[in-house]
Amino acid sequence: MNDTNVTPAVHTAVALFTIRERLQFLRVGAEQGRLPMVALRQGEGLEAGARRALETATGIEDVFLEQLYTFDGGRAGAQAIVAYYALAPCERLPIRRPGVGWADPAQVATLLAVDHQIIVQRACERLAGKLEYAPIAYQFLAERFTLSELQSVYEIIGRQTLDKRNFRRRMHASAHLVETRDVRRNGCHRPARLYRLRDTEPATAG
Amino acid sequence: MNDTNVTPAVHTAVALFTIRERLQFLRVGAEQGRLPMVALRQGEGLEAGARRALETATGIEDVFLEQLYTFDGGRAGAQAIVAYYALAPCERLPIRRPGVGWADPAQVATLLAVDHQIIVQRACERLAGKLEYAPIAYQFLAERFTLSELQSVYEIIGRQTLDKRNFRRRMHASAHLVETRDVRRNGCHRPARLYRLRDTEPATAG
DNA sequence: ACAAAAGTGTTCCTGTTACACCCATGT
DNA sequence: ACATGGGTGTAACAGGAACACTTTTGT
Image: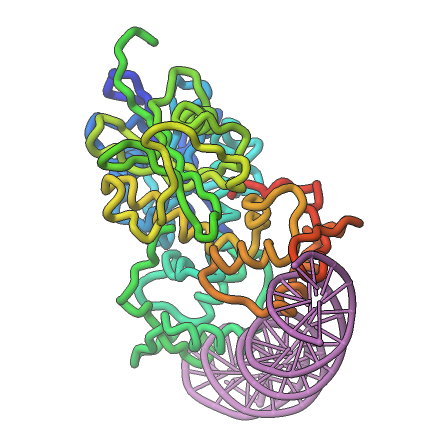
């Protein structure tokens, strides 16, 4: 659980989200679910602590990570819990550990301890809000993706269906997209053009 | 568990803003300025710690307070610094302590220690952003205020002049305003109608 | 009477929404 | 040939921006 024994004052917790048909988050712990969380070590940075929480619980590294909010420690003896949210495409997340798995944010109340529920809820709200003005949707996709995939991300996080033509116009105008020369042949229909995220500006924190 | 081992792990810092012609923040400390900051006590909540920081440094109580961001402790031995920003009308802030005073955010680099500079900067950005969608401007005004005063707050925080008619239309449409029956006679010109903030919804945290 | 801030509508423009059909492929 | 998702333009609408003059007071 927690290795260092020196007054576990600051904890870092991470709500890792991915999209597998629906928006889901990573839950650990057998009966009463929890989010990945560790006590911060002496001299360890906050973001480093959050990454370590994820890595310890799941083996996952190198995901998009952003600070969400800092909560009172409450029980567990912590003075504060600094919560982060993480985003990654599900292909990068081969979860192969007992007691670790994906869960639906809508059922957070039956799955998680109370202090972790609010983290997931707030993260969902932040995600939906930030979708409008920051290029976070791309974090759920592979490096190259189709516009239909991108639209699907927007629809799932924003909880509403979108008009295909308006969506494409908006994306093309947003200057985050770069059209590649390649297409993806997926089924018995016209192939889809592949796009990638413009490499400047890696979705600044805020 | 809670022995006398001090380790001031979590600090809370507060950037208190007010408007006195310009937007200003509260600086403490003689030579190298600082923000009000305290080490969190055992069992003390984060917001309580932030309020105590303000109260200790200035005697000020009961201001609007919202969490900004949590930073690495860096030097000073803290594991984390949980930063808040506070807003209040300057009439409520009779500062009468040596070394405590108002400063201009633009000169933050010459006034504050580096780790406190970024707090003020981020708070200014947050303020400007939040102005658009949250009723924070009212926090700078007395309970009753004129539309010209309100517009002035918007212009100062948003760093742009606004059209009077468009502004008034927008405010009236926003449903935060309540028109009172009173007016304020201020100078040799037509008196200004007084408004107040609708008492529901006290500017939810985010 | 005049100076000084309060108050008030309309037009234009821009960006958002609603909407239906052809295209390229695999079977 | 047909089923499947990929791809495209236009017209209506709403919200924001630009803009100038009258009102009420104090001196």
